[in-house]
Picture (tube, rainbow, N blue to C red):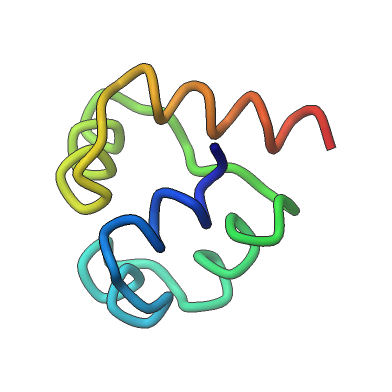
Length: 69
């Protein structure tokens, strides 16, 4: 599962995720296309888990997948 899979699972567009996280739409699209991964700071993790409605383990798996590309 990658970041795009997580986003689609919650039924949100890249634009919606960008607004909720306070990042550029291009940033979310880069995550979706496995070009970059989100920063995994404690506050960032909490926000990502809330917006993507996922667990810590799912986020880590999504980041690992983007690093392996």
